[in-house]
Image (cartoon, rainbow, N blue to C red; front, side, top):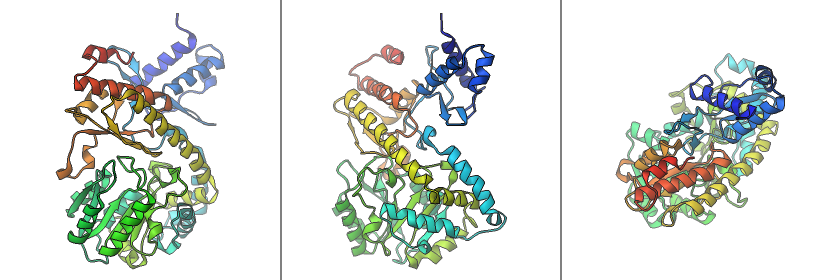
Length: 460
């Protein structure tokens, strides 16, 4: 006979599965459920605790419990939680909901004049000042006058891609693979974009120099730390070498340092630190380390480009949300951000180590995968005739979601032999289980092991 807490768990799962309780929906309080089911509060607490362990719900201190994702029925009629290696937003359980809510409430009072008027196109001055100070922790030293606020890094890229640069060149160079938003924006704006392979061994610097010398490269877009999708990070010496080549051939660098705060190596520097006066344009997003819906990022520009950048920004919007800017300024100034960063730095490092240990144990020996120290992403390179799209489809049938990474390539670089795993929204206890199933599916597609019937019951 099922225990009372197990019955309660089952009923909550059914409501999540049928949509009665949707993603983000707040669950009844412990007291309310204990009265409804005529049981002790400890029984409800145990049910909620088990649902948290299964990544069905998550808790917000002093607020309550919320639904993470809708559950999906297994083909054999068993309901199982999603193992989400696909989503790339921050971990729901560590996002600073209540802290930031407090900052928003303060911002409404402090910045009420800005809320009813158009503010500075470059961003509100108090935020630019706080960000200028904050970036010093990342070895980015720049006065507030060179810091510009945008509605996410995506807007900054959309501005920079068509914008004329002081070198008078028009073409763009990107790593392959790279962040899909960069590729999409370049293609929509019909800007000639070249690609250079980024492999397990890094960049081919002879090839990089060839592009810089012969292809009229306006800027080189790079994600030098915890690359999306590879998880790759350049060494300091490699960063210096990239900057030297850019200086030699009059090429600008657009450095997307979206996860720089997670770097466990205190001696790792951004490219910007090797040419702070004008060669490197530095992008910093607050979406991945905090709240995606905040839609605030900053761009550090050389002085010679500031007026042009503002003119192009004006064509996309008159201003970035003053409320978001004000709340972020308060969040940084109060010290809350630094406390939050300490927590997530430990969390994502631990998750990545769990992922790499699981890959080592459960993937076939001929499967190669990247091994980042932290960050969100690692990539598995598939062996033989195994196709990423087919593997992703097979895993989806088992409620495991991965990214086949096709959208992260320019058309001429397209490949179908790698999958990206993101650890940001998968719970710690699911990581090994998910990788184990990925290993099973790869073996099945290789024809080495596991029949289809075995695969269909492997979840049990």
